[in-house]
View (cartoon, rainbow, N blue to C red):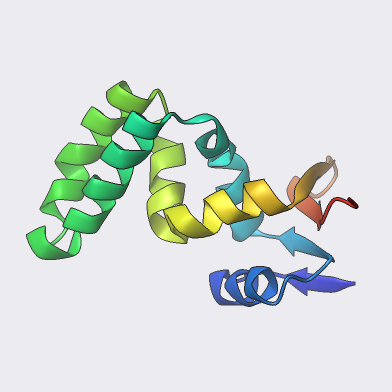
Length: 121
């Protein structure tokens, strides 16, 4: 089974519509933190995408101020917002829309592994 540990590998797997793969490491932690993105309403998604789009133009200063405001507006934690900014909103929406995510914790190693599977129609 395909094992993914980087954002680039994840983007490629989603783009290629891989039927099943595993995400490990820090990437798995970021996906877990951002899982609430699938429940956001249109206003929250609009505010989030506008704020993310402004980051490069403000040299990152809008990120520092905007994350706290977005946290209050969207109801997402600062950790979740940071994960969304790092991974990309579109990638995360597609991931949660197109795959079933199964979380597995290794209590001995304190690691998270996520198995992603395309649902059978």
